[in-house]
Image (cartoon, rainbow, N blue to C red):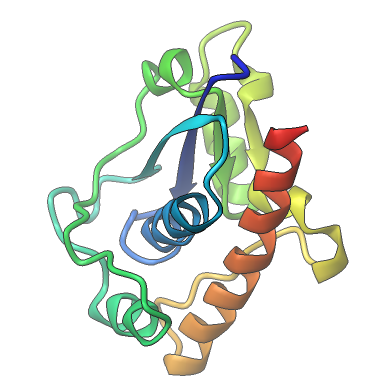
Length: 158
């Protein structure tokens, strides 16, 4: 990673709940905290279930309650080429991490990591998928993402 530029891709399964929320949370954090590094921030999914669709309306509503805007984002699928562009490809859980490690070109697997590595104090390796749950799940996701992206930003600034 260049000290002046850093690119981060957040990845979940369908790119409509967790990863676009992570993109919005991290983008807002970088905007508020500023700093010398330019960030290229994006999100994608490991599966093509929702390509071209906006984030889940419940995720958008939960983000909006915290002052975050993400309804302009659209789902896409992670590609092998993403590993050539992004310095970090951060999975929301172990299943998506395993998918990313299989997809990564030779020599690029180390770019795929779990986002929650940046928040060991959370006591969880995964950001749980809120898709089949209620509103509280989306709030929990935001809490975890705020914690992990703050740790990520601190690590990237070192």
